[in-house]
Amino acid sequence: MSNSAKSPGPLIVSFGEMLIDFVPDVAGASLAESTAFIKAPGGAPANVTCAIAKLGGISAFIGKVGEEFGRMLVDMLKKNGVSSDGVCFDKQA
Image (cartoon, rainbow, N blue to C red; front, side, top):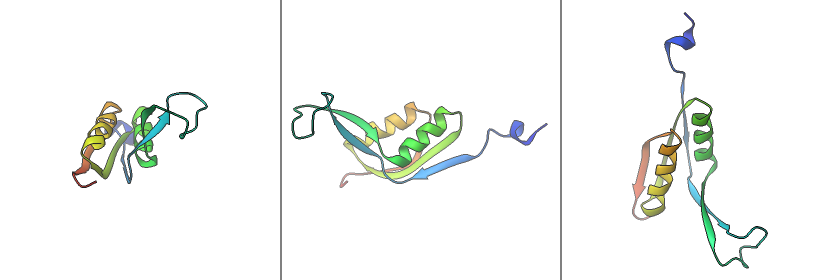
């Protein structure tokens, strides 16, 4: 039996920022011209953990986020199969 058959693989952990990109809702409009925006979750470390999970790996994210947008971001991690046990919420953020 190979080593990979015994365990699901290594846990890959990213830590850093999660953020919301505000993208104009009209293609080609500048930020100054736009009157409405779409919330797009992002942040390189969070994006990497989501990509790992989508490719079948085991990933987790560690970081600190604010309450309101942070809850939305953590929900996105969970929906993508990423462990968010290491995320802390800060009312001051």
